[in-house]
Amino acid sequence: MFGDKKPEAFMKEVCDAVDDLIAYARAKLGLSARNETFVRNTVLDLVGLESYEGTGREYGGQTVSQLLRALVDACARAGLASAEQPERLTDSVMGALMLPPEAVEEAFAAHMALSSEEATQWLYSYSVLSDYVKKEKLDANPRFTAENGLIVTINRAKPEFRDPKKAVSGNSVKGGYPKCTICRENEGYFGRNKRTLRTVTLELGGEEWFWQFSPYGYFHEHGIAVNAKHTPMHVDRGTFVKLMEFVDLFPHYFIGCNAALPRIGGSVLAHDHFQGGGETLPLHRAGISVPLRHPDFPDVAAGVVDWYGTAVRLVGKDARSVADLAEIVRAAWCSYEDRARGIIAEDKDGVHSAVSPTVVRTERGYEMNLILRNNITSGQYPDGVFHAHPEFHVIKKESIGLIEAQGLFILPGRLVEELADLEALLVSGGELPEKYADYAMVFGEMKAMGPVFTEQTAHEAVKKELASVCERILGNTAVFKTQAETAQFMIEKAGFVHD
Image (cartoon, rainbow, N blue to C red; front, side):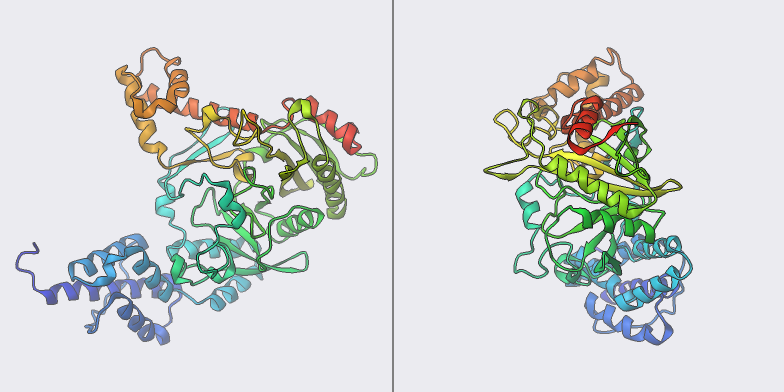
Protein backbone atom coordinates (compact mmCIF):
# COMPACT_ATOMS: atom_id res chain seq x y z
CA MET A 1 0.00 0.00 0.00
CA PHE A 2 2.87 2.39 0.76
CA GLY A 3 5.17 1.17 -2.03
CA ASP A 4 8.82 0.73 -1.16
CA LYS A 5 8.80 3.07 1.81
CA LYS A 6 10.42 1.42 4.87
CA PRO A 7 8.94 1.57 8.40
CA GLU A 8 11.87 3.76 9.51
CA ALA A 9 10.75 6.40 7.02
CA PHE A 10 7.28 6.51 8.55
CA MET A 11 8.79 6.91 12.03
CA LYS A 12 10.89 9.76 10.65
CA GLU A 13 7.65 11.42 9.49
CA VAL A 14 6.28 11.18 13.04
CA CYS A 15 9.48 12.74 14.44
CA ASP A 16 9.19 15.53 11.87
CA ALA A 17 5.56 16.15 12.84
CA VAL A 18 6.44 16.21 16.55
CA ASP A 19 9.30 18.63 15.97
CA ASP A 20 7.08 20.89 13.88
CA LEU A 21 4.62 21.06 16.78
CA ILE A 22 7.40 21.74 19.28
CA ALA A 23 8.62 24.59 17.06
CA TYR A 24 5.03 25.89 16.86
CA ALA A 25 4.70 25.78 20.64
CA ARG A 26 7.96 27.72 21.02
CA ALA A 27 6.73 30.36 18.57
CA LYS A 28 3.04 30.61 19.55
CA LEU A 29 2.24 28.94 22.88
CA GLY A 30 4.97 30.14 25.23
CA LEU A 31 6.95 26.89 25.46
CA SER A 32 10.30 27.74 27.02
CA ALA A 33 13.69 26.32 26.07
CA ARG A 34 13.99 24.93 29.59
CA ASN A 35 10.76 22.92 29.24
CA GLU A 36 11.23 21.86 25.61
CA THR A 37 12.86 18.47 26.23
CA PHE A 38 10.37 17.54 28.95
CA VAL A 39 7.41 18.49 26.76
CA ARG A 40 8.83 16.70 23.72
CA ASN A 41 9.21 13.52 25.76
CA THR A 42 5.61 13.85 26.92
CA VAL A 43 4.44 14.20 23.31
CA LEU A 44 6.52 11.21 22.21
CA ASP A 45 4.81 9.15 24.92
CA LEU A 46 1.37 10.34 23.79
CA VAL A 47 1.97 9.38 20.16
CA GLY A 48 3.57 6.06 21.14
CA LEU A 49 7.16 6.54 19.93
CA GLU A 50 9.84 4.67 21.86
CA SER A 51 12.71 6.13 19.85
CA TYR A 52 13.34 9.59 18.49
CA GLU A 53 15.73 11.33 16.16
CA GLY A 54 15.72 15.11 16.28
CA THR A 55 15.37 17.14 13.11
CA GLY A 56 16.13 20.67 14.32
CA ARG A 57 13.12 21.94 12.36
CA GLU A 58 12.01 25.57 12.71
CA TYR A 59 8.44 26.85 12.68
CA GLY A 60 7.40 27.30 9.06
CA GLY A 61 4.19 29.30 9.44
CA GLN A 62 1.73 26.40 9.29
CA THR A 63 -1.62 26.62 11.08
CA VAL A 64 -2.24 24.44 14.10
CA SER A 65 -4.82 22.48 12.09
CA GLN A 66 -2.27 21.71 9.39
CA LEU A 67 0.29 20.58 11.96
CA LEU A 68 -2.16 18.33 13.78
CA ARG A 69 -3.40 16.75 10.56
CA ALA A 70 0.21 16.02 9.63
CA LEU A 71 0.78 14.38 13.02
CA VAL A 72 -2.31 12.17 12.82
CA ASP A 73 -1.53 11.15 9.24
CA ALA A 74 2.09 10.33 10.12
CA CYS A 75 1.03 8.25 13.14
CA ALA A 76 -1.50 6.38 11.00
CA ARG A 77 1.07 5.60 8.31
CA ALA A 78 3.48 4.42 10.99
CA GLY A 79 0.84 2.08 12.39
CA LEU A 80 0.76 3.75 15.80
CA ALA A 81 -2.31 2.97 17.91
CA SER A 82 -2.61 6.63 18.96
CA ALA A 83 -3.94 7.46 15.48
CA GLU A 84 -7.04 5.35 16.13
CA GLN A 85 -8.42 8.12 18.39
CA PRO A 86 -7.35 11.26 16.52
CA GLU A 87 -9.36 13.75 18.59
CA ARG A 88 -7.97 12.41 21.86
CA LEU A 89 -4.45 12.36 20.40
CA THR A 90 -4.53 15.96 19.16
CA ASP A 91 -6.21 17.25 22.32
CA SER A 92 -3.65 15.51 24.53
CA VAL A 93 -0.69 16.69 22.46
CA MET A 94 -1.86 20.32 22.43
CA GLY A 95 -2.59 20.16 26.16
CA ALA A 96 1.02 19.12 26.72
CA LEU A 97 2.41 21.84 24.45
CA MET A 98 0.54 24.79 25.94
CA LEU A 99 0.97 26.70 29.19
CA PRO A 100 -0.48 25.13 32.34
CA PRO A 101 -3.52 26.82 33.94
CA GLU A 102 -1.59 28.86 36.50
CA ALA A 103 0.71 30.31 33.84
CA VAL A 104 -2.30 31.21 31.68
CA GLU A 105 -3.92 32.89 34.68
CA GLU A 106 -0.74 34.88 35.37
CA ALA A 107 -0.44 35.99 31.74
CA PHE A 108 -4.11 37.02 31.69
CA ALA A 109 -3.61 39.07 34.87
CA ALA A 110 -0.61 40.81 33.33
CA HIS A 111 -2.70 41.80 30.32
CA MET A 112 -5.58 42.88 32.60
CA ALA A 113 -3.19 45.33 34.24
CA LEU A 114 -2.99 47.05 30.85
CA SER A 115 -6.64 46.70 29.75
CA SER A 116 -9.42 44.17 30.00
CA GLU A 117 -9.92 44.22 26.24
CA GLU A 118 -6.27 43.34 25.69
CA ALA A 119 -6.61 40.53 28.25
CA THR A 120 -9.64 38.92 26.61
CA GLN A 121 -8.10 39.29 23.15
CA TRP A 122 -4.96 37.54 24.39
CA LEU A 123 -6.89 34.68 26.00
CA TYR A 124 -9.10 34.22 22.94
CA SER A 125 -6.10 34.22 20.62
CA TYR A 126 -4.35 31.70 22.87
CA SER A 127 -7.47 29.49 22.85
CA VAL A 128 -7.44 29.56 19.04
CA LEU A 129 -3.69 28.93 18.80
CA SER A 130 -4.01 25.96 21.16
CA ASP A 131 -6.83 24.51 19.03
CA TYR A 132 -9.38 24.68 21.87
CA VAL A 133 -11.44 27.15 19.82
CA LYS A 134 -11.42 25.61 16.35
CA LYS A 135 -11.76 28.90 14.53
CA GLU A 136 -10.94 27.47 11.11
CA LYS A 137 -14.02 25.24 11.32
CA LEU A 138 -16.18 27.92 12.89
CA ASP A 139 -15.33 30.43 10.17
CA ALA A 140 -16.61 27.91 7.63
CA ASN A 141 -20.09 27.88 9.21
CA PRO A 142 -22.74 29.52 7.00
CA ARG A 143 -23.82 32.88 8.42
CA PHE A 144 -25.74 35.89 7.15
CA THR A 145 -27.52 38.98 8.45
CA ALA A 146 -31.06 39.20 7.10
CA GLU A 147 -33.09 42.24 6.09
CA ASN A 148 -35.17 41.83 9.25
CA GLY A 149 -32.01 42.37 11.34
CA LEU A 150 -31.66 38.79 12.54
CA ILE A 151 -28.38 36.90 12.26
CA VAL A 152 -28.76 33.33 11.00
CA THR A 153 -25.98 30.79 11.40
CA ILE A 154 -25.63 27.07 10.83
CA ASN A 155 -23.19 25.57 13.30
CA ARG A 156 -21.70 22.35 11.98
CA ALA A 157 -19.61 21.84 15.12
CA LYS A 158 -22.52 21.88 17.57
CA PRO A 159 -24.60 18.73 18.09
CA GLU A 160 -28.36 19.16 17.76
CA PHE A 161 -29.78 19.18 21.29
CA ARG A 162 -33.47 18.28 21.47
CA ASP A 163 -34.00 16.89 24.98
CA PRO A 164 -34.86 19.57 27.58
CA LYS A 165 -34.68 16.94 30.36
CA LYS A 166 -30.92 16.71 29.85
CA ALA A 167 -30.62 20.43 30.45
CA VAL A 168 -31.98 20.04 33.97
CA SER A 169 -29.24 17.56 34.82
CA GLY A 170 -26.72 19.85 33.22
CA ASN A 171 -25.42 17.23 30.80
CA SER A 172 -24.13 15.38 33.84
CA VAL A 173 -21.14 13.18 33.24
CA LYS A 174 -21.39 9.44 33.77
CA GLY A 175 -19.50 8.54 36.93
CA GLY A 176 -20.06 11.95 38.53
CA TYR A 177 -16.72 13.55 37.68
CA PRO A 178 -16.82 16.29 36.68
CA LYS A 179 -20.35 16.92 37.91
CA CYS A 180 -21.35 18.50 34.59
CA THR A 181 -19.92 19.65 31.30
CA ILE A 182 -19.06 23.18 32.46
CA CYS A 183 -17.60 22.52 35.92
CA ARG A 184 -14.07 23.84 36.36
CA GLU A 185 -12.86 20.28 36.92
CA ASN A 186 -13.17 19.86 33.14
CA GLU A 187 -9.98 21.91 32.78
CA GLY A 188 -7.44 19.40 31.49
CA TYR A 189 -9.80 16.42 31.85
CA PHE A 190 -8.94 13.75 29.27
CA GLY A 191 -12.35 12.05 29.44
CA ARG A 192 -14.04 14.89 27.56
CA ASN A 193 -11.08 15.96 25.41
CA LYS A 194 -10.60 19.08 27.54
CA ARG A 195 -6.81 19.02 27.93
CA THR A 196 -6.62 22.32 26.07
CA LEU A 197 -9.29 24.09 28.14
CA ARG A 198 -7.92 27.03 30.13
CA THR A 199 -9.99 29.24 32.43
CA VAL A 200 -9.38 32.48 34.34
CA THR A 201 -10.79 33.43 37.73
CA LEU A 202 -13.32 36.24 38.21
CA GLU A 203 -15.07 37.68 41.24
CA LEU A 204 -18.76 38.45 40.75
CA GLY A 205 -21.06 39.40 43.59
CA GLY A 206 -18.37 38.50 46.12
CA GLU A 207 -18.24 34.93 44.77
CA GLU A 208 -15.61 33.06 42.80
CA TRP A 209 -16.51 32.60 39.14
CA PHE A 210 -14.39 31.82 36.11
CA TRP A 211 -14.37 32.68 32.41
CA GLN A 212 -13.66 30.44 29.47
CA PHE A 213 -14.20 30.68 25.75
CA SER A 214 -16.66 28.38 24.04
CA PRO A 215 -15.43 25.87 21.47
CA TYR A 216 -18.85 26.16 19.79
CA GLY A 217 -18.28 29.85 19.06
CA TYR A 218 -21.78 31.08 18.23
CA PHE A 219 -20.43 34.64 17.75
CA HIS A 220 -17.23 36.69 18.06
CA GLU A 221 -15.28 35.79 21.22
CA HIS A 222 -18.19 33.79 22.60
CA GLY A 223 -17.51 32.70 26.16
CA ILE A 224 -19.16 31.67 29.40
CA ALA A 225 -18.79 32.94 32.94
CA VAL A 226 -19.35 30.05 35.34
CA ASN A 227 -19.96 29.90 39.08
CA ALA A 228 -17.05 28.04 40.69
CA LYS A 229 -19.64 26.10 42.72
CA HIS A 230 -21.86 23.55 41.00
CA THR A 231 -25.13 25.26 41.86
CA PRO A 232 -28.34 25.43 39.77
CA MET A 233 -29.20 28.26 37.42
CA HIS A 234 -31.31 31.01 38.94
CA VAL A 235 -32.19 34.62 38.18
CA ASP A 236 -32.76 37.17 40.94
CA ARG A 237 -31.52 40.59 41.98
CA GLY A 238 -28.08 39.13 42.68
CA THR A 239 -27.92 37.93 39.08
CA PHE A 240 -28.53 41.46 37.80
CA VAL A 241 -25.75 42.76 40.05
CA LYS A 242 -23.29 40.12 38.83
CA LEU A 243 -24.08 40.86 35.19
CA MET A 244 -23.37 44.55 35.70
CA GLU A 245 -20.17 43.77 37.59
CA PHE A 246 -19.10 41.66 34.63
CA VAL A 247 -19.51 44.53 32.16
CA ASP A 248 -17.65 46.76 34.63
CA LEU A 249 -14.74 44.34 34.25
CA PHE A 250 -15.22 43.86 30.50
CA PRO A 251 -17.10 46.88 29.08
CA HIS A 252 -16.37 45.71 25.52
CA TYR A 253 -18.48 42.57 26.03
CA PHE A 254 -22.17 41.89 26.49
CA ILE A 255 -23.24 39.34 29.09
CA GLY A 256 -26.53 37.59 29.68
CA CYS A 257 -28.21 34.79 31.54
CA ASN A 258 -30.59 32.13 30.29
CA ALA A 259 -33.97 31.74 31.90
CA ALA A 260 -33.56 29.03 34.51
CA LEU A 261 -36.24 26.72 33.11
CA PRO A 262 -36.31 23.90 30.53
CA ARG A 263 -37.35 24.70 26.93
CA ILE A 264 -36.67 28.41 27.39
CA GLY A 265 -33.24 28.09 28.97
CA GLY A 266 -29.97 26.74 27.67
CA SER A 267 -28.63 23.21 27.47
CA VAL A 268 -27.16 23.33 31.00
CA LEU A 269 -29.48 24.40 33.83
CA ALA A 270 -27.84 22.50 36.69
CA HIS A 271 -24.84 24.86 36.89
CA ASP A 272 -25.15 28.63 37.25
CA HIS A 273 -23.50 30.42 34.34
CA PHE A 274 -23.73 33.40 32.00
CA GLN A 275 -22.96 33.78 28.29
CA GLY A 276 -21.38 36.73 26.56
CA GLY A 277 -18.75 37.98 24.20
CA GLY A 278 -17.54 40.60 21.80
CA GLU A 279 -20.47 41.04 19.43
CA THR A 280 -23.43 43.40 19.59
CA LEU A 281 -26.47 41.21 19.02
CA PRO A 282 -29.63 42.41 17.22
CA LEU A 283 -31.69 42.90 20.39
CA HIS A 284 -29.18 45.43 21.71
CA ARG A 285 -29.42 47.37 18.44
CA ALA A 286 -33.23 47.46 18.51
CA GLY A 287 -34.94 50.70 19.46
CA ILE A 288 -37.68 51.49 21.97
CA SER A 289 -41.27 51.39 20.72
CA VAL A 290 -43.02 52.48 23.93
CA PRO A 291 -40.99 54.76 26.25
CA LEU A 292 -41.76 54.24 29.95
CA ARG A 293 -40.50 55.39 33.32
CA HIS A 294 -40.97 54.33 36.92
CA PRO A 295 -41.89 57.11 39.39
CA ASP A 296 -39.65 55.62 42.09
CA PHE A 297 -36.58 55.45 39.82
CA PRO A 298 -36.16 58.81 38.08
CA ASP A 299 -32.55 57.96 37.21
CA VAL A 300 -33.52 54.91 35.11
CA ALA A 301 -34.92 55.20 31.58
CA ALA A 302 -37.17 52.38 30.47
CA GLY A 303 -39.27 51.14 27.61
CA VAL A 304 -40.67 48.28 25.59
CA VAL A 305 -38.16 47.14 22.99
CA ASP A 306 -39.21 47.17 19.33
CA TRP A 307 -38.59 43.45 19.05
CA TYR A 308 -40.11 40.21 17.76
CA GLY A 309 -40.11 38.60 21.21
CA THR A 310 -41.21 40.28 24.43
CA ALA A 311 -38.47 42.45 25.92
CA VAL A 312 -38.18 45.56 28.07
CA ARG A 313 -35.11 47.73 28.54
CA LEU A 314 -33.80 49.55 31.60
CA VAL A 315 -30.99 52.10 31.22
CA GLY A 316 -29.16 53.86 34.03
CA LYS A 317 -25.75 54.69 35.43
CA ASP A 318 -26.48 53.58 38.98
CA ALA A 319 -26.17 49.79 39.19
CA ARG A 320 -28.22 49.60 42.40
CA SER A 321 -31.17 51.41 40.83
CA VAL A 322 -31.06 49.27 37.69
CA ALA A 323 -30.87 46.07 39.76
CA ASP A 324 -33.73 47.15 42.04
CA LEU A 325 -35.99 48.04 39.12
CA ALA A 326 -35.07 44.88 37.22
CA GLU A 327 -36.09 42.86 40.27
CA ILE A 328 -39.47 44.65 40.35
CA VAL A 329 -40.06 43.68 36.71
CA ARG A 330 -38.90 40.10 37.31
CA ALA A 331 -41.14 39.64 40.35
CA ALA A 332 -44.13 41.18 38.56
CA TRP A 333 -43.67 38.91 35.55
CA CYS A 334 -43.06 35.73 37.52
CA SER A 335 -46.34 36.19 39.43
CA TYR A 336 -48.42 37.33 36.44
CA GLU A 337 -51.19 35.11 35.08
CA ASP A 338 -53.44 35.64 32.09
CA ARG A 339 -55.10 32.41 31.05
CA ALA A 340 -56.76 34.10 28.10
CA ARG A 341 -53.28 34.62 26.67
CA GLY A 342 -52.12 31.19 27.80
CA ILE A 343 -49.82 32.66 30.44
CA ILE A 344 -49.69 30.47 33.56
CA ALA A 345 -47.03 31.37 36.10
CA GLU A 346 -47.19 28.20 38.18
CA ASP A 347 -49.18 24.97 38.38
CA LYS A 348 -48.80 21.40 39.61
CA ASP A 349 -45.87 20.93 37.20
CA GLY A 350 -43.96 23.82 38.77
CA VAL A 351 -42.93 27.36 37.90
CA HIS A 352 -43.33 28.44 34.26
CA SER A 353 -42.38 32.13 34.05
CA ALA A 354 -38.86 33.52 34.07
CA VAL A 355 -36.73 36.32 32.63
CA SER A 356 -33.56 36.25 30.57
CA PRO A 357 -31.50 39.36 31.38
CA THR A 358 -28.76 40.62 29.08
CA VAL A 359 -26.55 43.67 29.63
CA VAL A 360 -24.23 45.98 27.71
CA ARG A 361 -22.43 49.12 28.89
CA THR A 362 -22.70 52.27 26.80
CA GLU A 363 -22.23 55.99 27.34
CA ARG A 364 -25.76 55.96 28.83
CA GLY A 365 -24.69 53.50 31.52
CA TYR A 366 -25.95 49.96 31.97
CA GLU A 367 -28.43 48.88 29.30
CA MET A 368 -30.28 45.86 30.64
CA ASN A 369 -32.77 44.03 28.45
CA LEU A 370 -35.19 41.74 30.25
CA ILE A 371 -36.70 39.11 27.96
CA LEU A 372 -39.96 37.77 29.38
CA ARG A 373 -40.27 34.00 28.95
CA ASN A 374 -42.77 31.25 29.78
CA ASN A 375 -42.41 27.49 29.25
CA ILE A 376 -46.00 26.32 29.76
CA THR A 377 -47.12 23.45 27.51
CA SER A 378 -50.53 22.45 26.17
CA GLY A 379 -52.15 19.64 24.22
CA GLN A 380 -51.75 21.67 21.05
CA TYR A 381 -48.17 22.66 21.85
CA PRO A 382 -46.56 19.87 23.90
CA ASP A 383 -43.09 21.36 23.38
CA GLY A 384 -44.20 24.75 24.66
CA VAL A 385 -46.90 27.30 23.93
CA PHE A 386 -44.21 29.99 23.71
CA HIS A 387 -41.68 27.80 21.93
CA ALA A 388 -41.09 27.33 18.20
CA HIS A 389 -44.33 25.90 16.87
CA PRO A 390 -44.32 22.44 15.22
CA GLU A 391 -44.33 23.72 11.64
CA PHE A 392 -40.90 25.24 12.30
CA HIS A 393 -39.30 22.26 14.05
CA VAL A 394 -37.72 21.06 10.83
CA ILE A 395 -35.59 24.22 11.04
CA LYS A 396 -35.28 24.64 14.81
CA LYS A 397 -36.67 22.38 17.52
CA GLU A 398 -34.09 23.00 20.23
CA SER A 399 -34.73 25.36 23.12
CA ILE A 400 -34.85 29.02 22.14
CA GLY A 401 -32.31 30.22 24.64
CA LEU A 402 -30.58 33.48 25.43
CA ILE A 403 -28.66 33.84 22.18
CA GLU A 404 -31.60 33.18 19.84
CA ALA A 405 -33.85 35.36 21.97
CA GLN A 406 -31.41 38.20 21.21
CA GLY A 407 -31.69 37.59 17.49
CA LEU A 408 -28.78 35.30 16.63
CA PHE A 409 -30.04 31.89 15.54
CA ILE A 410 -27.85 28.80 15.76
CA LEU A 411 -29.35 26.22 13.43
CA PRO A 412 -28.31 22.55 13.29
CA GLY A 413 -25.57 21.38 10.94
CA ARG A 414 -27.87 18.93 9.13
CA LEU A 415 -29.43 21.94 7.37
CA VAL A 416 -26.35 22.44 5.19
CA GLU A 417 -27.10 19.32 3.16
CA GLU A 418 -30.88 19.48 3.44
CA LEU A 419 -31.17 23.10 2.31
CA ALA A 420 -28.76 22.46 -0.56
CA ASP A 421 -31.13 19.72 -1.71
CA LEU A 422 -34.08 22.11 -1.49
CA GLU A 423 -32.19 24.71 -3.54
CA ALA A 424 -31.57 22.10 -6.23
CA LEU A 425 -35.27 21.23 -6.26
CA LEU A 426 -36.21 24.89 -6.69
CA VAL A 427 -33.90 25.16 -9.70
CA SER A 428 -35.05 21.89 -11.28
CA GLY A 429 -38.72 22.35 -10.47
CA GLY A 430 -38.79 18.92 -8.88
CA GLU A 431 -41.24 17.70 -6.28
CA LEU A 432 -40.41 17.39 -2.61
CA PRO A 433 -39.32 13.79 -1.84
CA GLU A 434 -40.91 11.84 1.00
CA LYS A 435 -37.81 12.11 3.20
CA TYR A 436 -38.31 15.88 3.24
CA ALA A 437 -42.04 15.78 4.00
CA ASP A 438 -41.51 17.90 7.13
CA TYR A 439 -40.33 20.72 4.86
CA ALA A 440 -43.67 20.92 3.03
CA MET A 441 -44.76 24.30 4.41
CA VAL A 442 -41.29 25.84 4.28
CA PHE A 443 -40.66 24.57 0.75
CA GLY A 444 -44.05 25.83 -0.39
CA GLU A 445 -43.18 29.32 0.85
CA MET A 446 -39.84 29.15 -0.97
CA LYS A 447 -41.54 28.12 -4.23
CA ALA A 448 -43.94 31.05 -3.92
CA MET A 449 -40.93 33.36 -4.33
CA GLY A 450 -40.45 32.00 -7.87
CA PRO A 451 -41.85 30.58 -10.04
CA VAL A 452 -38.52 30.18 -11.90
CA PHE A 453 -35.22 29.95 -10.06
CA THR A 454 -31.55 30.18 -10.93
CA GLU A 455 -28.94 28.83 -8.52
CA GLN A 456 -28.50 32.35 -7.17
CA THR A 457 -32.19 33.17 -6.74
CA ALA A 458 -32.82 29.75 -5.18
CA HIS A 459 -30.06 30.42 -2.65
CA GLU A 460 -31.54 33.84 -1.87
CA ALA A 461 -35.01 32.31 -1.48
CA VAL A 462 -33.68 29.82 1.07
CA LYS A 463 -31.97 32.59 3.05
CA LYS A 464 -35.10 34.74 2.96
CA GLU A 465 -37.21 31.82 4.18
CA LEU A 466 -34.78 31.00 6.99
CA ALA A 467 -34.89 34.62 8.18
CA SER A 468 -38.69 34.61 8.02
CA VAL A 469 -38.93 31.36 9.98
CA CYS A 470 -36.56 32.68 12.64
CA GLU A 471 -38.60 35.88 12.96
CA ARG A 472 -41.80 33.87 13.35
CA ILE A 473 -40.16 31.62 15.94
CA LEU A 474 -39.33 34.71 17.99
CA GLY A 475 -42.96 35.71 17.56
CA ASN A 476 -43.95 32.29 18.93
CA THR A 477 -41.81 32.97 22.02
CA ALA A 478 -43.43 36.37 22.63
CA VAL A 479 -45.63 36.15 25.71
CA PHE A 480 -47.37 39.37 24.65
CA LYS A 481 -48.12 39.51 20.95
CA THR A 482 -48.03 43.31 20.71
CA GLN A 483 -45.76 45.87 22.31
CA ALA A 484 -48.83 47.75 23.52
CA GLU A 485 -49.79 44.68 25.57
CA THR A 486 -46.28 44.56 27.04
CA ALA A 487 -46.54 48.23 28.00
CA GLN A 488 -49.93 47.58 29.60
CA PHE A 489 -48.40 44.82 31.72
CA MET A 490 -45.51 47.07 32.78
CA ILE A 491 -47.92 49.85 33.77
CA GLU A 492 -50.56 47.75 35.54
CA LYS A 493 -48.33 45.18 37.24
CA ALA A 494 -44.89 46.77 37.67
CA GLY A 495 -45.78 50.40 38.41
CA PHE A 496 -44.44 52.06 35.26
CA VAL A 497 -46.01 55.03 33.50
CA HIS A 498 -45.77 56.35 29.96
CA ASP A 499 -42.86 58.71 29.45
